[in-house]
Amino acid sequence: MNHHEMIKIASEAALIAGEEIMNIYNDSKIIDFENKKDNSPLTKADKASNSVISKILKKTKIEIISEEKKITKYDKRKKWKYYWLIDPLDGTKEFIKKNGEFTVNIALIKNNLPYIGIVYCPTFKTLYWNDPKTGSYKKHIDNIVKLKKRKELNFKDSNLRVVTSRSHMNKETEGFLTKLNNPKIVPVGSSLKILFLAENKADIYPRYGPTMEWDTAAAHAIANGSNVKLFNTNYESEISYNKKNLLNPFFVAYP
Image 1 (cartoon, rainbow, N blue to C red):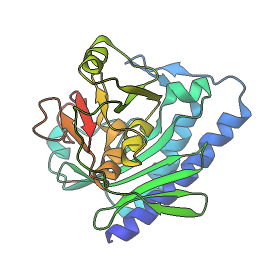
Image 2 (image 1 turned 90 degrees about the vertical axis):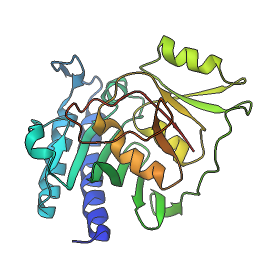
Image 3 (image 1 turned 180 degrees about the vertical axis):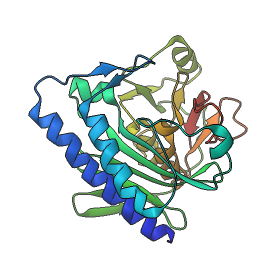
Image 4 (image 1 turned 135 degrees about the vertical axis):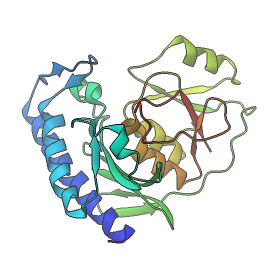
């Protein structure tokens, strides 16, 4: 199965999962949820999306890691060359708030790095993906646009557009902002933060708070296709995947 077929199957999974999510979103005035062990919320939509995606991706015969599934032990998964990494509903807090800023994230990881990413935002009917050979793309309804390559960022520029989380601002992020020249704050939820950089709607995304690998992988692949990198805070290397602990280090994303 080549990468074009992988993109097609994963895109189909994301779109159908998005329909399931929107059925619950539109039928509920108030979103019911339960808290998981890490105190993060879990809804019917998370479960429905995970079920759909897992079923469709099984036809690829590639292993899956999902936020909503029991994680395979590291001794086994560390040997995987390829695997799917999914977040069935990224931005569950935004889903509960009903502000529309949530996504379906599906990534294909190759040798512990993001290879293919599919992100679907069902409220906006917008699908993002990357082809590892040709770049990154955005499809809204039937209109397909190739995302342009970003030029290298100059941190000394004024009025840089800085993406921040709607739900996770902290002192470390505020400290980072003080080092910039009159930054413009762009608050947004879910993996849309990374995609804003890929689309040239923002310039930098400092993340000095916890994220898991499935939160970033799909958008990371798409961002790379637009020359946007997710650097460790030492600015020397990008974050990697399939670690023993699936918690990401803090990172700064920029072109």
